[in-house]
Figure 1 (spheres, rainbow, N blue to C red):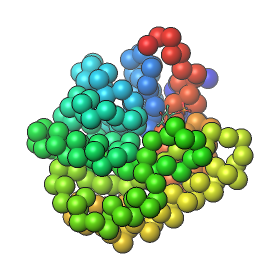
Figure 2: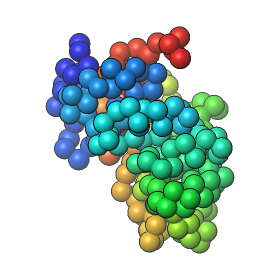
Figure 3: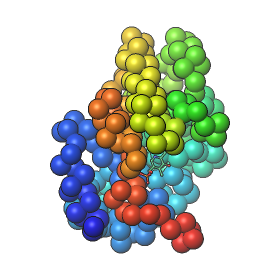
Figure 4: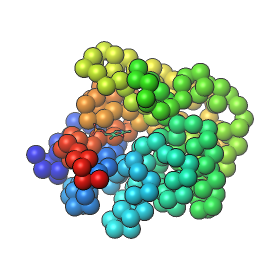
Length: 224
Ligand SMILES: *Cc1c(COP(=O)(O)O)cnc(C)c1O
């Protein structure tokens, strides 16, 4: 299927309130332009240092979302233009985003990444850490970030019940944390669901799905 057709048929299955982040990591600009021609405006990338070039080369009404783990020394590359960072996975990263947002004279919207999967390697806060963080005044005082919700990745498994239960856990946490909303904490986005599991994520309350291979086909990492 063409990129355009993949996007069109995917969007038909989504409730209106769920937004699609087209994950364009490793894709050439021509593929991004094809998705753009189909009306897609939100693209997700995972390498901060590659984003400024894409931002320069591609249409300015694209919303660039960062979805991958960031080293704090790379945040400066995206701070001037990134629309949403899904992958804030530590207080250190949150502080670095706040610092670079201040330098860029911006307020940057962030999602806190929560570790919901079984796999050891996935980054993110655990539930206990996150509750403590929201209860503390500190994050509510960071003037150049807006915490807009949570992001999570389910375990890479065929077991749909397990995936569903991990997404449900994240949604419950998201709802629970609403009681700590403040000037700069507003829980409105829940980023969950990728090519293999976005249908389950949508049923469990996702507001942003991050889909790559189901749109662009399998990634060819040897191009990198
Ligand atoms: C690559 C990636 C995706 C998209 O994965 P697909 O399986 O290609 O849809 C989604 N979220 C994150 C964080 C990713 O790194």
